[in-house]
Image 1 (cartoon, rainbow, N blue to C red):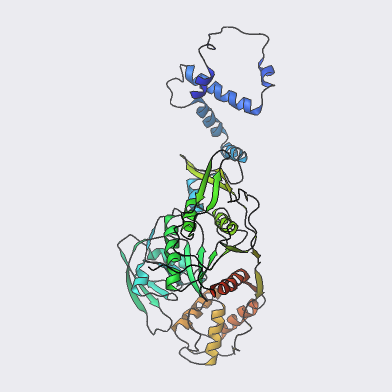
Image 2: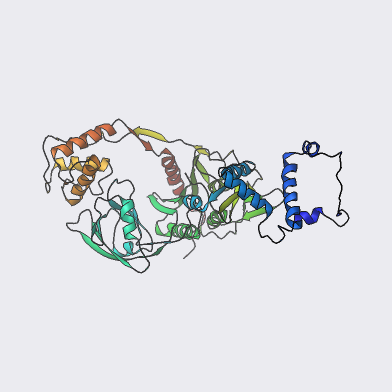
Amino acid sequence: MNRLIQKITAAALALVILLSPCLTAAAAESKLTDIDKADTLLDISDIITYFSVDYQDSEVHMIEDMLAELLRRDPDLYQEMIDYMFSKTDRYSDFYSYEEYADGYTDGEPYVGVGISADPYYPFGLVIESLVEGGAAGEAGILPGDIVITVDGEDVELMPFYESVPLIRGKTGTTVTLEVLRPGSQKLLKFELERRPLPTSSVRYEYMGGGVGLITIEHFNYLDDIIAFIRIFESIPYDDGVKSVIIDLRGNPGGNVDVMYNMINYMMVDRMLLFSLTTGTYHEHYITDGIGLWQPNEIIILVDEYSASASEMMAGSLQMHGMATLVGTQTYGKGRCQFHLPIMTGVVVITVFDILMPDGSGYDEVGFTPDVVVGQEYAPYPVDHLSALDGSRAIKYGSVSKRVTALQERLAALRIYPGEVNGVYDEVTRWSLKVLQKYCGFDVTGDADVGTLKALAEIIDELSETEILIDRQLETAFEMAVEAAKAPRPRPLPKR
């Protein structure tokens, strides 16, 4: 009743029993704006609710009753009203049901499993792409490239990975037994693994050679992302002798500003203003503490048109301070910051702050221009180097020949062969042929019969007419980073 209390004072309150013939409803209404009408409706609802005998004991506000009845008659108005209200804000604000919010924003909670990541490129089968630090799989000796054949005795050899992975997960403390086929091994390897909670970090690291480390950050969301980044950044100069660092923010839509700030904070060895969040009257400044352990010779940040929000804040602030060189294409241009506010039926995402760079400029709907603008390129699919393969006769399992080498080359070109191209028709080669046969709808035998070889040749011919992406952006960044790594370190590494 705050609105009512403000409007009704002791001096104005009176009982009036009078009908004025000179004031008509139509005359009054014609002078009201839409805002006046909305305000009037709320005032009338307040007054009726406060003074009416029928409503003074009710817990439901009259306007809520009115809206409920209106929506009962026309349910479609619910979404129309929401859309109308958010149309008066900006393009970043919206309302999501909890189901929609869960689909768009992961919760960052640790998942329970054994610590393996599957290669999603394989249409069938679970080939291990990488291992999660702290997982039982890596500790037990499972390796990238291993092919999962059974899970607790259940055959998953040619099951799509999104169906077999849930079989591996389970409750904390329980165990699961995996049998895997390893390239170069003559028999299945068995591992009994304990399930445990594992972090969900989106930060990955790869040593590229030449004194260059590559850190890929998919988003800035959780504490696990900060921890993973700090561990990587503080370790790589000692573990790999890295002098230059490439940070890949391509496709990074942003996330939590504080997560991103803490990553930068552990990179900077000096105090500096990175950016500010402002509402026009309120300003929050983000300044580094100068707690960084070491300074690379060169920091190169890869960006593209999908680098947005917090990823732009990282790239733009470091670029302005001369701490990083940007390579790629113009960034998205999302220079406003939102709060995520849960309510009873969902989550309101509402814009609160404008983002300002160290020089006081904004970048909303503008983005950042890289220091080195490089687009991506496409080239013919690399199949012209393949050895000749006579497909007029079958290839026998267990044989060792140049024909097997040519077969393996083609399976590798399709990215369905995780083994070494060595000319030996082994179990891994046979497994890859099973994947191909299932994909083609053939009988799954693993045999290199004439029909399978013919289908393989046809697929290779089709690929020769297509193109693949050549990552010129990463190539350019790597060349620059290698050159910078040739110089002495700007500051000696502290002893650990």
